[in-house]
Amino acid sequence: MKINSLAFLTSLALALPAVIPTVTSADAQVRKDVSEYAGRRCNTPPRGSGIIVGQFSGVDDSPFISDGDALVAIDRYRCFTTMSECKGWLYTMQSKYTNAGAATLARCIKR
Image (cartoon, rainbow, N blue to C red; front, side, top):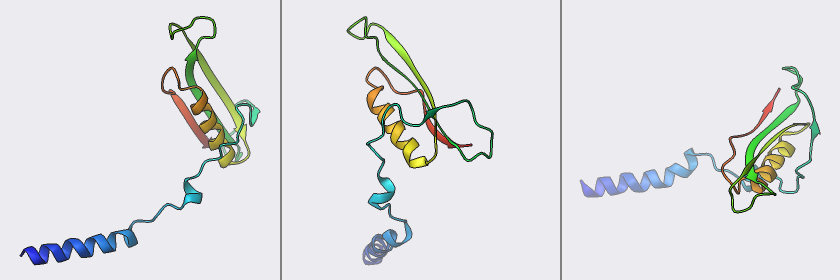
């Protein structure tokens, strides 16, 4: 019985990588060279327009009151032509504005 269990677990371990799709490094990478001011300011585009909308809401420490006593809301809404640029922008925003707390909204959607 133990030999059968061992054989089953071994075959499962060998077959599992073939069943689960692997993520290549190209799929997992996010552009890190995107500016905080990337994209363009815009109003909500109509559905079906194909425009990528990036939304970010978070907080940052106030530049006037130190030691984390006051927080300033950071809200940004930008339009992009590619999803990779939008995701890079989100990476930049999350890197820059999550010192005082987690972002409440961070997403890229295609309209």
